[in-house]
Length: 148
Image 1: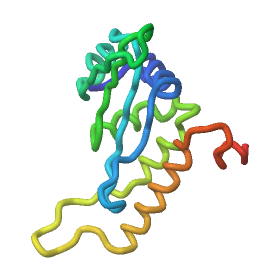
Image 2 (image 1 turned 180 degrees about the vertical axis):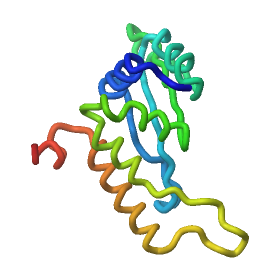
Image 3 (image 1 turned 180 degrees about the horizontal axis):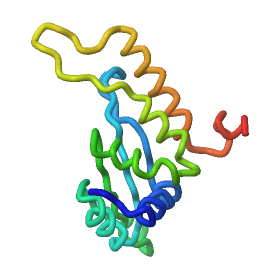
Image 4 (image 1 turned 90 degrees about the vertical axis):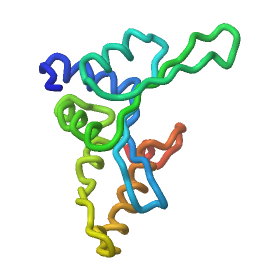
């Protein structure tokens, strides 16, 4: 679903503040782009689904008595990549993660017995996955922030 420039900028702000841009990994070789937003305001989740026409949402009960319920919106694969491409010019904090997702090579389905990915492709995916994990590492002392 095409977004207005205002919606792209708004979504980029949401992703920078409340979102996660990452890879899902199978066997450390096969990567899928994932995009998630977590928030306690369900109206934001409805906005995402309504404006993007994609994704699933999940609700979580509070773990502590006085906390509000939390909601997670998630989309993966080509749809996630398409959304990231639309908001990339407006991203600030999550731009490095977004650029890694754009660098991920796309492979077509192979015919039976013919692999689509070479060992070089697997190694490149491993490099991208390590870089993404470093960018998304939690904590004040992660190496990425020490270099800033």
